[in-house]
Length: 258
Image: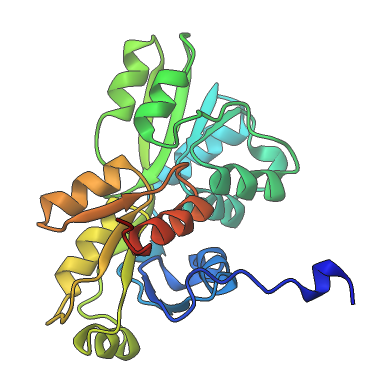
């Protein structure tokens, strides 16, 4: 037997239960990484992403296909899924700026080309800072509840940003039974949040909780939202990726040494 084969599998989260608040159809990568490290991952979606249909979005996509936009900003995988449901890859006739590795990878897998700009800091503030100065129309296809600020920052650099709702975000009235039971029994060691909206949805659906689950956030914007809702943030991902979130869970749950 080789040394590699005999080496024990590293499972630093073995025996730990972690709640994943991403939408069910977007949670697979995070769940897989948690389980690979030995955790019991419970999917407890605190938001639901649903398509939006509007004349404004339809007109914007027609202009995108006609090459009337210089740039399009992609801030989530859901934006890519919207494009894939409405356009052929060759009809994205603009330069593409994407936040985060997941969004960039999703676009590349669908469109067959790399994005043109990806900031080193995976936030809308980071995107605005990385954006070059210039003139022309920029399509900002975002969630209906996404915060303001990106468009103003782009306009300050000379661009003409046009924001459209690419998808809508719904908040559930309650969490799934398995998640509610685990929270009520004090079995949850950590809760992960990957956007400000997952925080709001979780707090809105939250019932009685026993114990003190550690709160782990993907980035500073999400952490700020958690603190605004009275939650103590125990760790923030570095970098702001799914793997970074799992590393942050490890840090939050690591026993303190004297």
